[in-house]
Image (tube, rainbow, N blue to C red; front, side, top):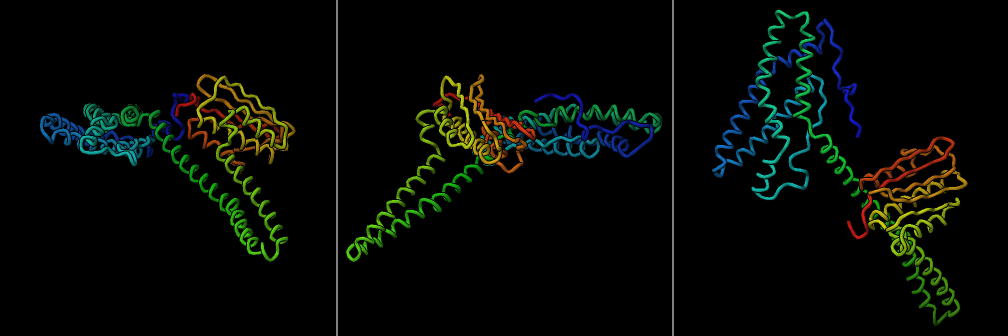
Length: 392
């Protein structure tokens, strides 16, 4: 992630002017409200923290302290809302203390989770240091309304910029941690949805394919059994048809098993497995796999199915004459690149399954990069975390 020093356009206050506009009045209102709001917060945290620490030798001390920290979280939420309304500061709310489905077990777990809550402790620090600053801002703003009113907009902007910095520094969530939590929650949903879709696909393929053929086979063999004594030749024809149905059912089951996890991938690795799917592509494909060892089974499977999906797109949509698949390892990443000399113009939202591939790779901390200008060529690079074989 690239650090950006300046504020985004939608989070930057408007330019300061001598005239009093609504933004200036909002900043003045924020500064005047600082003192009563900070006084309430200061009294709250001093009372709850001091009494909680003082009673920590008793049974109710630590639960009281945890309750006070929970209330501090609410104070922080109110301060963020005030900053959004009056200062235009866009700050995301921190993640809940207890993630969904991961609530601590028992009273001790609840107490420990509350005591080590960094969001609450940062809010406590914020409320401690706010009171003297609030006295200064309230006094300066109140005096400025009567004495410094020609330059008060500039004074208010300087004071509220300090407030903005304080809110961002102490009341905003940890950017990297919160981003990672959001990504993991999103990726978990993608994994669950993908697994459910795969199960539905397997069930549909079994029901509409092999199962239907086996039912027809059973019925055909039953009819042949009834005709065996009366019409041996007709029974023999029906048995021959049933034999053909058995072959087709076995082929469909093999195709289904290959779609779940091909045997050649398990037995011989990516080189042989990718060569096998390349041979079925309608475009000549050159496969190059440069790996000194095999990755973990899950990573190997994702790489295989990514290439399989991309080569299907090459066959169906690219109008290419040649294609190439390259697989190699770079430090702790496995890189897969598929390119063709087709007409290009592929997009993640183009309905060719690209967005689904990107979501699947993102679910395992991977990357998916598509470069497909109109007229070609198309180059797709997939990056996966490298994990040694035998490790999850």
